[in-house]
Amino acid sequence: MADSAKTAAKTEGGFNFEDMFLWFIAITILLVIFIPNFSYKKVPDYIDNVLNEKVDERGVKKPSVLEQVKFKASDLLIQIYTFLIIIGLFFWILFIMIKKYFENKLATVKKDYIKKLKEQDELYIKGVAETQAENTLQQKWSIIQNKFANGVNSDLRIAIIEADILLYEALKLAGFNVGNSIGEILKSLDVSKLRTLQEAWKAHKVRNEIAHQGSDFILTKSEADNTMISYKRVFEELWELIK
Image (cartoon, rainbow, N blue to C red; front, side):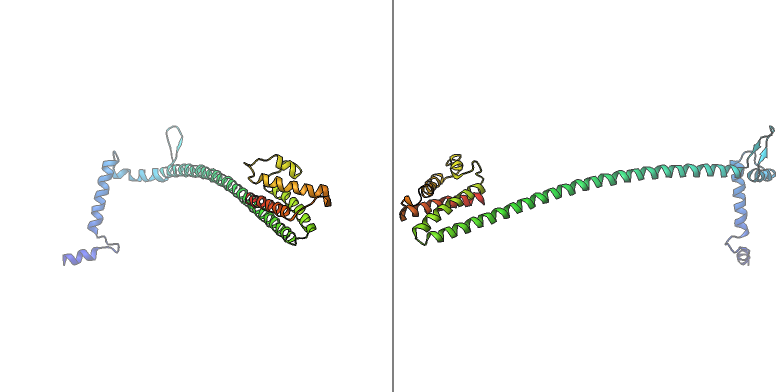
C-alpha cells in the first residue's frame, strides 16, 4: 500500500514530493554556503535587485542585475562581432593574396608553355622546310642525271652547268653562306668542313671552262662522267649536312 501511495504521489514529470523536498534542502544549503548572510527574509530583496534598478544614498541609479547582464552580454556580442569582422578581413586579404599569387604563377607557366610550343613549332616548320628543300634538291639532281644520261654532248654541257647551279643552292642550305658565288664559298672552306672540297673544285672548274669557252671547249665523255661523279660525291655529303 505504501509503495502504491508513493507511486500515486509522483507528478507527471517523474518526481514525487520526497524528491522535491530533497532538491529544496540541497538548494537551501548551497545558498547558505555560497551567499553570505543569506536569509529567506532577503529573498524578495534579491529578486528585486535582479529585476529592478536601485538608487543609492548619493542618488545614483544602479542598474538591476538583469540589466547588467544585458549590458555585459551586449558588450560581449559586440566584441565577438568585431573579432569576427577582423578575422573575416584577414582571411579575405589572405585569399586575395593567394589568388593573385596563383594567377601570376599560372600566367608565368602559360607564357613558358606558349614559348616552348612556339619554339617547337618553329623547329618543326624549319625541319619541314629543310626536308622539302632537300627533297627539291634531290628531285632537281634526278632531273639533271636523266638529262645527262641522254649522252648528247649539248645535254652533257647543260647538265654540268645545272649541276653547278644546284651545288650553289646545296652549299647555302648546308650553312655555307660566306660569299656570293661558288668560288667564294669554296675558298672559305677546308676539308675539315667539307671532305669533298677538292671534288667540288674539280667539277666547278669544268663548269667554268664550259661557261667561259663555250663550244671551243672540248668536253669528252669520260671527262663529263668524272665531273658528274664529283658532283654526286659532293651532293651526297651535303645531303647529310642539310638533314
